Amino acid sequence: MALYGNQALTGREIFFDEKDLIVSKTDLKGKIIYGNRTFLTMAQMREAEVLGQPHNIIRHPEMPRCVFKFLWQELENKKEVFGYVNNRAKSGDNYWVFAHMTPSFDEKGAVQGYHSNRRVPHRDVLNKHIIPLYKDLLAIEKSYDSPKEGMEAGYQKILSVLEAEGKGFNEYMFSLNDA
Image (cartoon, rainbow, N blue to C red; front, top):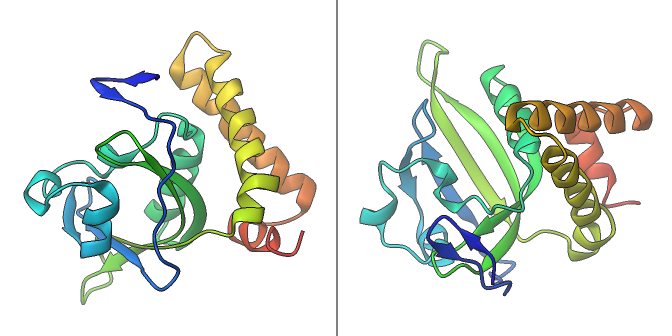
C-alpha cells in the first residue's frame, strides 16, 4: 500500500449509484461549507470532519495537480467547468466522479463561493482516455525537481492536447463520450 501523509491508500475503488449526486459547496478559499449525504458517504466522513476543511481533503494523490490548476483558473474567471476527478475516501479507497463545478454569485454578481455536483463517470471514457491522460500528466509533474515547474509542464501538456483537438476544456471532456 502506498502512503499519502498518514493515509494508507488501499488501491480499492468504491462506487456510488447512478441515481445519486454528490454535492458540495466551498467558500472563496476552497473550504467546505456544505456536503450532502452522498458526499459524506463517499468521503467516509462525518459532517463535523469536513466543514471548514479545504476541499482537497478528498484529493487523491494520483490526481495531477495541473488539472486542478486548470479547473481553478476557469472558476476564478467566473466560468463553469466539467471534468473527471479521482477522489479518495477516509479509508484510503478511491472513487471517480464526473464533476460540474460553478462559481456561486451573490445578488451583485460577485463570486461568493463555489458549488460542485458530481455524477457517476462513464467508465469507458475513464479507461480509454482519462486514466491514461492523467497518468501521463502525473509522470510529467513528477519528472521535475520543482513541484511548481512540474505542475506548469503538465498544464502546458493539457493546453497542447486542447490545441491539437481544437476544443476548449469542457468541449473536450464531453467529446470523449463519443470517442
